[in-house]
Structures are given as C-alpha cells and as structure tokens.
Amino acid sequence: MSKRFSVTVPDYVFEDLEAIARIQGRPTATLVAFLVEAFVRDAREKGELPSAKPPKQDGAA
Image (cartoon, rainbow, N blue to C red; front, side, top):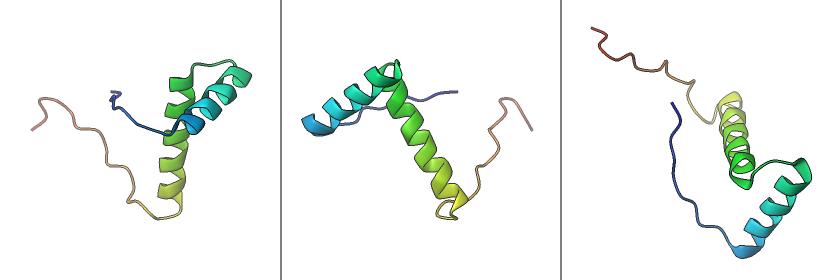
C-alpha cells in the first residue's frame, strides 16, 4: 500500500525537480517518489536503517 504526504521545498528545488521530470518524461510527483524510495533503499543498504519489516497481514493471529 502506498502512503501520501506533503513536502515543502524551496522554489528553486521544485523548479529543478520539474525540469528533471520534464526531461525524463514523467510527472514531478513520480520523480520525487522514485528519489525518496531510492534514498531509503540506499540508507538501508548502508546499514543506516534496519531491514524492512514484513508487511502486516490483516486478520492474522
């Protein structure tokens, strides 16, 4: 399941993200989601975060 949240960044950062997204042919939000996911994956691989926990299963005992 995906989660949503809002992020406030300086105008120049947003403008750069828009430019990169335009060059890559994807929406800015999709680019930012990819960048956040890549950052977290990298942090996990470096040992800065514990390994991912398995997802909860509804109704599991």
